[in-house]
Each structure stands twice: as structure tokens, then as C-alpha cells.
Length: 415
Image (cartoon, rainbow, N blue to C red; front, side, top):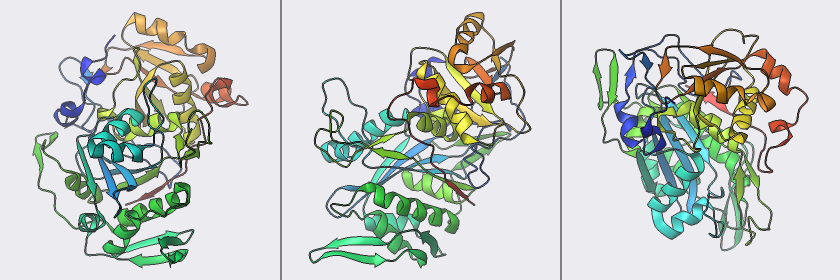
């Protein structure tokens, strides 16, 4: 196997040490308006051992807390290679945490109430299979300071923003287009409406972040040191640093889709709890923050290259590999037309034998031995049209997926 041990453990240090060495073919975000999942740039950077480095894509966790101490909105901020621009991923506060056997089910927001930002971070890291290098829980006032800029925030919402007063529910912002101040945006991000499901607020949260991304920040970054062709991020980045760096470059906004979990074994208290789409989570995190991803299973690590502009095809590949217990640690879009045959690039014969066994639910795989390796990756699967043809007419996951699988959420890009 070629997987490096550090990927199976804490990636905090690696996220900063693994700088951008040249222009490698890796995603810088989600090209959502163009109906394309991942970006890539041409070129490979290889060291003396013929190993291509994954550039640093560290991630931070930002929780916005209401006046009663409850998390009102939750975001992952993933920096693009080079430390400028990136992706803001909205995470449902009511998403079900991954709990150990015998533990009572809980929401991510419950983890914050139980153990503060540390407990919340642990639960989000477990749910997304990612390691954060910075974390913060901020109030409305603190959030307004984080996003304050010279320009107003233009937003378009498809539903009214309501608040709960002693006299009842009151509308504070009607549906439509609005120009808001940073204080107004922060107020909505830090607002919970008691009794209303979070699913009602999620589209509003997403629209606010799209507006924030569009407004940007006129703040000069000073903590990126450039040496030759390598860009190294200073190790002491705060969540404020993450947000400022992201908003000074090309920004993508994504929101995880979520299914309400009905009252039952997984939700015994009938709380406002949601299941995320596991395949979507893996696909997005492995595309925008690959250096922060850890291996989940005791098996090989796989990279997926896709030339398909249809994200559902890439998601289906991720889903089927996860069903097989395979770690998908890197996903990227490559330019050009999809190849005819799905190719598996490998350097070790045991990897070839294992990957060829996936054909039962993955379709025909053409092995190709290569000498170049990607650090932390055992096999690279380049999706071909035969994979698309193989899954056509089949149920998602080949009929052996779980009940938590849901459709991939559409998203938007701003710059």
C-alpha cells in the first residue's frame, strides 16, 4: 500500500506543511453555476521520489450562536490551494452526530450545549471525516465584525425571515431581493425561531452566504509566505483569517442536503434532526479540503477523476466505493471529454487485485500500472463512459445503499 500513516491520523500539521508545489491538478472549489462539480488546473508537480503532493487545503469550523446560547448556523470554511479563495459549506445544525454504540442519538447543536465548541468540533469532524485547524463559536456582534466590509450584502431569499417575539411570530424580512448591512446579515445568521424546523431556515442561510461571498472583503492578506514555487500558510490561522482569506479570492458556496429523521430509534425524542447524504459529504469534502480528510476504513485510499459535468455521476461513484468500504480521499474534475473505459491507475499489485474486485457494483475497470504516485493515494480511478452506462437504469448505490441517501443538493458559485 502507498497510503501515508499521517492520513489515517491527525491531519492538522499536514494541512500546513503540505504546501502548493507548482500547479497540480486539484480542485479549488465547486463550479456550481456551470453545473460542474470540481475545478482543476493542468500540470503535475513531482518530487525526487516521483510522488505528487496534495496542496494544503486546511479547513475551519465557524458556529454562530444566538442570544440563548444555541447554535443558529454552522459553516465549514475550506481554503483553496495557495491560501486565497475557497469554499464555504453550510452544515445543518440539526444534523445527526455519529455516536458510539450505546450512546443516545444527538444533533450537532446538542454537542455544543453539552461540551461547547470542543464537543461540537469533535462531532462535526466525525460526521464529515475531516480535521479542522481552527474553530470558533461567535455571537451576533462578533459575526458582524467578521464580515464587515466596505460594501453592502445583496441577497435574494425565496421565503420570509421571521422571528419569535412574546406576542408571536413576526416577519422581519419578506421574500425577494434585499441589500443588507453586515449587522443585519449577522443578526439572521444568529437567529433561531423556536418551534420552526431548521429546514425552513436553511435556504435563507445559504442565500446569506452567497451574498457575503459576492460582497467580498477588501482586506489584504499578510500571512502567506511565498518561497519560489511553494506557498506555505502560516500555522497560526484563526477562523477570522480563514474567512478573510476565503473572501479575498474566488468563493464557492455549498449547502449539504438534509432529510428529516422521523421519530423512532434514530430520533427517539422526535427532535429537529436530519440525516446527511453520506456520498455527498464525502464527495464535497474530498474535493474542497482533501489535505484535511482522514481515512475512515481500514482499506485503500482512492482518488476519483471525473470529466463528467453531471455531479450525480461522480456522487454515484463515491457512493458505490463507500458501500464497498473504500476510502475516497480526493475527488477532482478533469478537463476534456470523458474517456470510454474506466481506468484504474495503481503502482502496487495488491492494490490492482483489490480494485479489480470492485467490478461487481462498479462496472468494468481497466488496470493501468503507473510509476507516479499521489501522496496518500493508493489508486486513481478515472471515470469513463462505461461507468455511466453501467449505472444507467440502476437504483442509487446499485440497490444496496442505506435509507439516509438523498439527492445531491444544487449549489451556487460567486466570485
